[in-house]
Image (cartoon, rainbow, N blue to C red; front, side, top):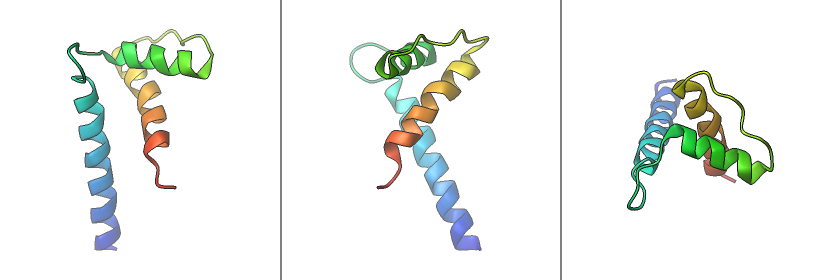
Length: 71
């Protein structure tokens, strides 16, 4: 059980690090809104209206997690 917990925690920490590092990618800094709007555009849909930055963060983070799942 402890090994499963450690593996889960490592995955969560790695995804969090990747999420935050991507904000600093390139010469510009990108907001959660920027990434959320990009995900919506890639999906061919209108971006939802986000009530706060956490909602935008969760929206694009879901796409990030899907893209990073082992295949």
